[in-house]
Image 1: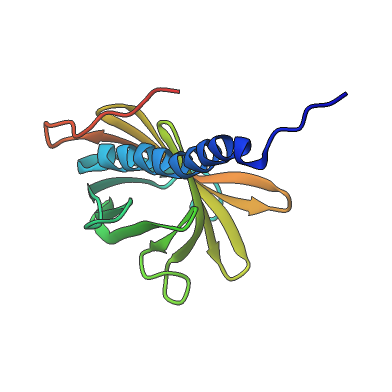
Image 2: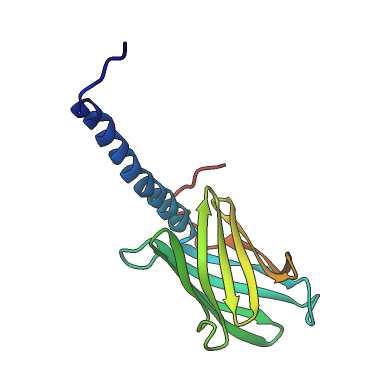
Length: 182
């Protein structure tokens, strides 16, 4: 003999499940915002091209990180210098739906790259990069409140090959926000 519960007995469970599904994206958005908040400020440091035609070229970057008004994401502006030559650098990333979109420099239609997807996980962010047949990824890892490593890799066959690496240090003297360690 089985006892049947009335359908209304499942309403509290359904309501709790719905509430849980609504909280998960907002909690993830809060963690993402916390990561991007930690990027705010002045950063400087060395980098190197580690593969390709210009392998071994060393450069120094000075960047300012900020968050777009009212949006989860980041804006980086500044320049990188090789010897006497300086190149403007910029990246703008914003959360759209369950992922991220943006542009490095002026995007794939200009001289830059499109950011077509992304994910934040603890102290790391991985962004998918695209320009015509070139596909790659950018990994930014906040090592401490005042240290960030950035690696840009491109897809060669089925493998991601690092091509640019940077070690940035905060130089504005104030840490902004804190991030959870994985």
